[in-house]
Each structure stands twice: as C-alpha cells, then as structure tokens.
Length: 467
Length: 97
Image 1: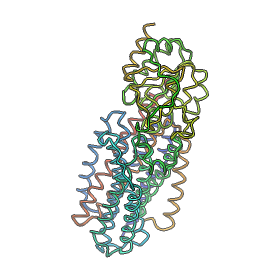
Image 2: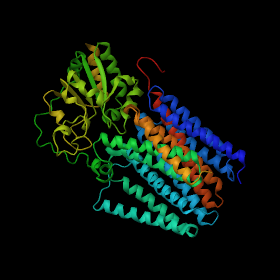
Image 3: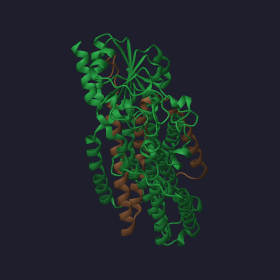
C-alpha cells in the first residue's frame, strides 16, 4: 500500500519537523535566541505541511488547498493587525482553532469507521474519542475565553448547583463517548454528533463561571489540552510528528499552567471550580482598613521620583488598559538621564497572562534586562526610594502576607510596601480582581495619583523634564 | 505508520522533553512561549489534511474542510503572533536589533 520511498521520504520530513519543533521551543526559552526559535519551528511546520501532499491514499487536493487559503489569510491578517494588548485573546482563539481541528479529525475518522469503510481497533477508537472530547472542550472553551477577554461577554455566569450540573454533563458526555467506542463500526452518525455536541456544550459551561482574572491559567490549560488532543489524533492517524509535537506542547503547557496557578497560590481545581475570579468588586468592604487614602498630584510625585536614587516601577493590567507602556518608557528614560536607577518589577500574574507585562514593556522598547522577576527584586524594595505602582493591585497587597482569612492570603506579592515611598497610579477607588481591599493604598508612605495611566505618566514626564 | 508500544514510548519521551524544555524558562518569556507552543500544536494541520484527504462523502468532506481551515488558522495565526511578540525582545546593551 505504501511505497517504500514514499514512506521513507514522508517520515524523514516528519522526523526533521519534530526535531525542529523541539529545538525551536528550546531556543524560545531564552530571550537571546527566542526570535530564531520561532523561525526554526516555522520551517518545521512548512516542511511537514508540504510533504503531507505526498501522503498515500489521499485525494481532495483542491479542497485542501482551498481550505488552507481560507484559513491562512484571515489568521495572518489578524495576527499582524491586532494590538499587542489584545494578544492573549488571539492566542485563545488560535488555540481553540487547533482544538477544533483535532476534534474534526476524530469526527472524520469515527464517521468513516462507522460507515464500515475501515476498521479502527478499540484502542484507536478510544484515543479518537478522548482526543475528540478534549479538542472540543478546548475549542468551545477557548471561544468563551476569547469572548471574555475581548469584552464581548462581561459577566460570569454562576448559578446554584452549577458544578453538579457540569459534572453531570461531563459524565453523560463520557458515557456517550463510551457508547461510541463500544458500538464501533455500528455507531450511528447521530450518536457521534450528539457526543460532539455535548462535549462542545461542556466546554462552554465549564469556562463560563471562570472570571477574567483567571483567564491566563485557563488559556494555558486549554493550550495544553489542545496539545494532548493533537497527540491522541496523532495516534489515530499513526502520525509521529503529531504525537511528538502534541505531547511536547501538552507537557510544556501543563507545567506552564501549574507555574501560573502556583504564582497565584491557588490550586488549579480552585481556579476552575470556585468561580473566585468572577466575584471582582463585590466583596469589597474596606470597613476595617486603618488610615486613609492620601492623594498627590503629578508634579509632586515627579519631584519625588526625580530626586530618588532608585525607582522601581510595578506595572499591572491597568497599564495595558491605559496603553501607558510607551509613556512609562519615556518617563523611565527621563529619569535615567537624571541619574535615577529605574527597574521594572513584574509579578508572574500581572496582566492577563504570564509575561504579558514583559511583552507590553518590550513593545514600548524597554530592554528586558531592566525587567526583574519577583524573586530577583523583592529584596531591593527596602533600599528603594520610590515604588511606582501603575495599574497593579492584588499583586502588591500586603494582606496576602498578613491576613489568613483573605482570599489572596499566601500569594507571593511584590514587596512594594517596603519601599520608602509608594506612588500608586489608579483610575478610581475600586478593588482588584479578587475584590479585596488593598491595605497598601492606606499606608502612611503611600500617595495616590488618581487618573488614567497614560495621562498620568505623561504628566509625570513633564514634571521630571521641568526640573 | 507508527503503532502500539512504539507510539507509547514516543509519547512518554516527548512528554519528558516538553517538561524539560520549559522548566528553565524565565517568566519574561512565558507568554511568547505559550504562544510558541500554541503554534507548534498547529501541526494538527497535517492530520486535518490527511483526514480531508481520506474523506469521500459530502459530510466527511465538509467536516474535514472545516478542520483544515481551523488548523491552518492555528498554525498561521500562532506563527505571526509569536513572531510579533518575540521581535520586541532586545537588550539595552544593543545586542539584537
């Protein structure tokens, strides 16, 4: 059936592609070589795609090429045009598409098997069904994540017995999948479609109650799930490139998800099933807060910073919303010219995705060696004259250290409160995503600079320049 | 092409590779790396092409067609998003770009 040279050629290309993917990911894990990494992986993808046209026993070449063009053009256009701040939802969207594609592979293979065209062994049938389930959940879940991040869907849907209903739905979906496996060649198309429909609905319902603050973890989880689904469908098709690439992503994505959940000090189960991130703003009471909020104007804050020896800037999601990264970089340059040492401190979960802030700052031109992780910089706050907190909230809330009853207790935070002076740029008096009152804002050495991040950064810059 | 235990061995080894490759990554690269791994599972395109290539009824052709469109979106979109993010990494010492 398979000519030897054909099999050899295809497999050597897949082998090369798999090696390029792994090397590419490896290179992507260091800032110096990262840009080369994606090119390597890209070459691997092109090689694997081209050689697949030589696959034995396939037809519909016209349809394949048409589908590739229809898929490629909008994806290319949006990826090029979308603003850097919207990157998280683009990743969610493209990831969902991959999950959906894995599910369609399963659908085609299962329907063909049910039509008696080719037999699938029970093992392969099981893997196809599992990949279909995971891929479908990743697909519909990622679309919900996209809608939430894009602001198309504001509220989180929470109702009583939600977890029970989700569990019930999940069990029914699994049961239906089991029936598909047992019936094998005699499974009806209707049965297969019902299974897919339930899996898609489950993905939506599972993601709906999860709040915006938890989306990074969710996207990362779905990324890992899509990888796994791709690996399973790779088993079904006997395609080593898919098995390797899918599994590598599945493992890497799982680790990344754990790192993120750990940074938030919440077990993954808590993120997925508690609806915690959704309650934003509702729990805010602030009854027992000591002290008061002390406003400052931009000119005074600018003087404070201009005469400082060291300033640490703590950016949060508010910076992304206000698109303030460019102005902040100008401010940084202004301060550096005056001899002030400026550093950026990034909390692992600042923004919407791990590393989101780094990407935004990099976009503005901030060199990555001015940007520090929580472990690297936390000890330095004590020798810092001014900590400028811009659009960050929960990640600098000292309550995480002191109050065991707080929902964010135990989360590692940036020790901005230990700096000699703290300036907080903030639009209003609202709380962070956790809905917990921030005691830092009430501290004696904290001054509040109310206003839009970009506008305030511009005013600070003017203030510094005027000196 | 690949069967049984060989596939299982590949699965296990690849899982270790994935874990190792990412375990020493600085936080700064988490988002680009997530994006990069998102691109890598765009290899699903290869499978989608084979599935569509196998399709012979209008139903399976339609599903397979959707699959290839989605998979291409994953691969192409994933690539350019990652590339855009990574392009912005440069050192103040004036190394790259």
